[in-house]
Length: 122
Image (cartoon, rainbow, N blue to C red; front, side):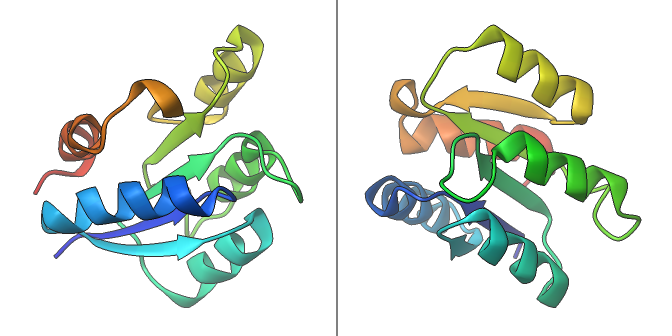
């Protein structure tokens, strides 16, 4: 079973995505902020990280930069979640090494599963 870390401070959104991914056969660990997400990455091995762009303690791009600069996490695909279609943030995320991104409120859980399958398989 593939293991996914979902880092998002909006608990309701995280639960909806977790439920959809779990129904598709993925193990999903939730983290409600960047600090917790970074701690989780140190403790467990993940096949994919789904990372919110806007969090209260640190931006998603800052977390992405940390992940992509560490030998132990640089190869993990990262899918960015954002509420905003902000070209600068998206371009920065892709240049930092994000594999893809989704606009949070324009994606259904089943659509997220399709993106996840494309990135890490079943």
